[in-house]
Picture 1: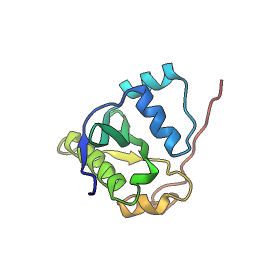
Picture 2: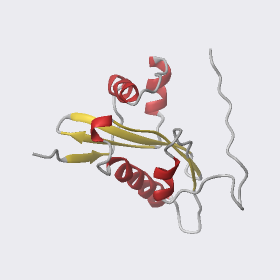
Picture 3: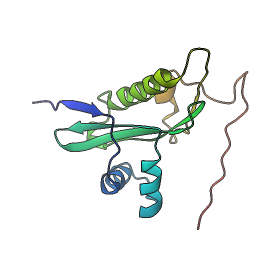
Picture 4: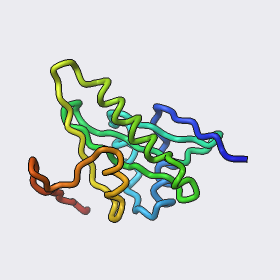
Length: 141
């Protein structure tokens, strides 16, 4: 019997967040930093199989500039359109929060090799005719 995935507007606890990061071979941040970051999410969507969180994505930002981050789907659940559904729900939340006459800019940094997934969701690879390349700076302590 196939699982039935449900989607929830909620912030996962730090342990669940770390479990998801580990499942996709991403490093974890320190607990204090992670808890603060999760609690400061603009929007967050989790996907559950029963009571088990199997995927998530979140938005950080101020309503004009929004970054989609932490889009993670446990490997055994990949390929089932869960990631696409999470992206669509996050974009819908941003759209709903954008007032008439307003504009929201949604950015993300795709994991290596995942750019095509985001292009299918309507994102544009940079640089392009309107924008230069995306840049970032990391701080390690």
